[in-house]
Length: 417
Picture 1 (cartoon, rainbow, N blue to C red):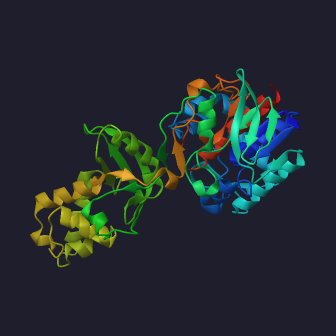
Picture 2: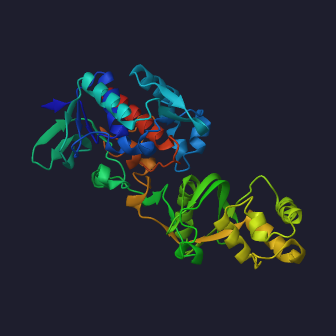
Picture 3: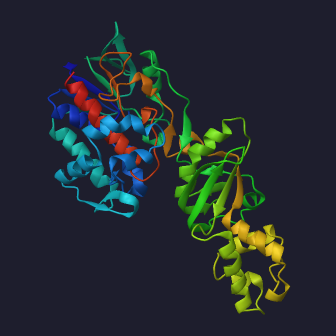
């Protein structure tokens, strides 16, 4: 049988591409190598599925530092407001949480996946699971179909590759699509992990003395080799047995990767434990804590403001004996303590692997893709959407919005081709 459109990959982008293509009159086949659709979507947002973010377009783009500007056309076709309306029409009521993140009221990713798959079926899309694709077929500059690993060739003049990146491979994202893109003449930009925990060989990390310590509302800053600030993010941070995790560590990770790529073995980061106060204010404030209870050890005074394990490390780095009392505080060391509170240093030497990352950086070169249609400039009838593209954003609904928007654009464009 010949199909108008074949979609490879049943994740966020592929499901939306199938819906958009069939909605616009195409006879669609959706192929996935796994046994069920929407596997990565089903574990997103901690199993709650952060379906989009309610920020306006310009703010959305700012939160997609990996080539977000490429998405202006896709967001005009199908932006966050359209995504919200789409899910609510499917009966999935959404709620807004901090920083514009939109979740299903059910707090269950499964309800989102089920609604998408049901809509795909309702619109008459044929679904084939457990059907890995061996090759996308090209003939004289035009897509001609796909060949399955099981043998059969399926014909179509339009193929949408929505096979994902290389992160979270147990959901099926194992980078299959890059070879199909290269066979069509596309170049793949360097792949790297983003939204990934950071590794460090600092003695206090190796000793695990801070393992499990969570810091709330701090600022993490990445510095380059010349001491210039690269990026800073404010939010929550978690110390692990290997380094740093938590939302702001993940957001800084792509910048750490890029600095390490410049022949650096380590990248310097600093943690500001009190972003809303200056070092001078902290000097006076912490000193007054001790002054108010002059017989109490400084360690116990500071514990009222900072977590105990952090206090011990701060005092050690400032060369202050934790049993000192107010009358014996050396002022220069106390000044150093306030500086450390504002810029606690962490040397980072890498990240966890791309397979352990939430998002893949790099992908199909965007110079070779028409942003208005998601069609290849190298091969007629070939479209790309989702994480296979060289687009990556922060966590918080931005990557999934990019996947839905590019999926919808690719599906509609292929149907009207």
